[in-house]
Length: 95
Image 1: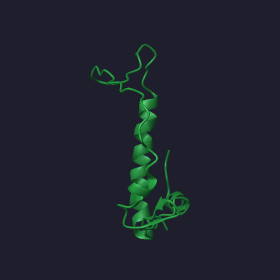
Image 2 (image 1 turned 180 degrees about the horizontal axis):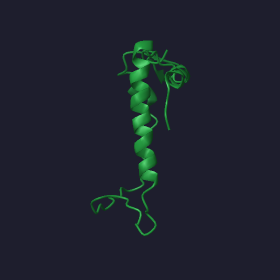
Image 3 (image 1 turned 60 degrees about the horizontal axis):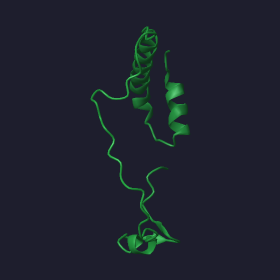
Image 4 (image 1 turned 30 degrees about the vertical axis):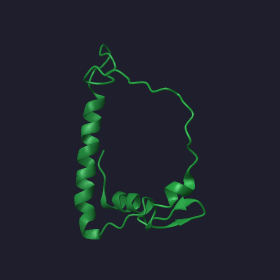
């Protein structure tokens, strides 16, 4: 699947990202390459391959399901640089 500059611009717009026009061609080529690899992976026959959950045997450490003193929102927010209405206030990162 080939991605063109117009598609890159549309994706950037939908993601609210600013992508300069001079970089859209490069990104289109990279995205096309990634989609090509995904298409190649889709061609691999995995009919007789067991699903892999982990490359190493991992045992789950269970903890007791005990009631704690939780519900300490005000104590947690006391350490925040800024808070409002019970939530952390963070700088805007998406335009």
